[in-house]
Image (cartoon, rainbow, N blue to C red):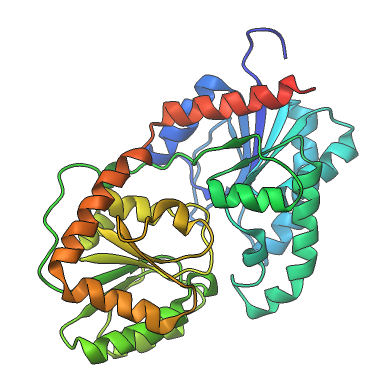
Length: 372
């Protein structure tokens, strides 16, 4: 890289994109394009599209999509290393980091490698998708540690994920959140409603602890017959959602951002009983709408929820404690208002512009390149 030139960066990840990019995600990549000469190697959305973007190389969705994506990824990265010749590779997770390491060896590339840690890799193979995936846990752990330890630099999205990196024997080069367009959730808020409604928004996967939520909600319903739960999401635990729906719970498989914002306005509290999160975007969305969050004291959730200030924290997996917290907020309007006010005050530290995020990424890239 010549002095004054923008670094060339190859971003590699499993995220799905549909071209042309929507306004929200376009703001992120346009801001990064101002700071870096970039290319993105990622998955293509299942929806058909004839649009193109020279910055994006998208892998079409196919049968056995996940295994095929990762099996082919080292060779696809190697192809981009030869064609694009980046100064640095930015891997979305340690698993893409492993593929990037193999590609560097295949091509003898001098590109530096940055591995990002958005979530605890110990959870991804054990509590996501098919239960059979937990058999891959020990191998996944070893691969993730290898990627983190052999990378030229790492970034964590929050303090807890920084500790995950330190547990692998490395100190993160940078700790900052990924830009999320929260525009649909910003703006004037509405008062916390009198109706005792709780909201869950997320994928219906085991790491979200949907089973624990269902068990806790049945305790809540027995104690507060007027209480209502609104469930939003889809995934492999659909049978749990279907059972709750038969019991009177409202279940929407998918909502737009504007509809989620309206659902937050209609609720007193957001529920986040997950086994692990990186830095949960949905909590940021709730804060912007002035709504408290009841979450597990697990993963990166305590990075964003301060107990009895902007929400309540309960031990992960403690069904009775989760039920008690939900009852406390749904039965005490003043508590819901106080925590909601704290949530709104907390929102300012998480609402960043795409320009601010892009500059942090460039600083990270330049720091890693300077180390060479």
